Image (cartoon, rainbow, N blue to C red; front, side, top):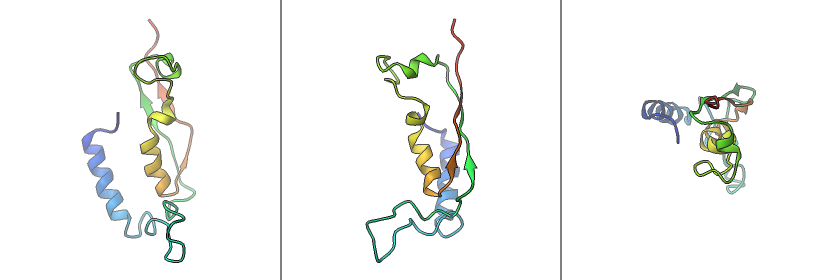
Length: 104
């Protein structure tokens, strides 16, 4: 699961342009310590974001590790790649809002 292609394309274009200094100062590493600090060069510290998601499944479908599809992974785990994109620019996560299909 991920974002639709048009959104992914926009993100790639924005993030690629932002690497030059608008969103981050390189990737956070320095020549003095090249193996430390990867992902800490973001310039958006203090900015917050929220993911607002909808699922056509009851909450139990992701909370129960014995369920077939989500295997007990919650929203934060399912959207980990998206969260890492924002974290790369040092943005702060707010609680994820997820709407679930009501039980029938």
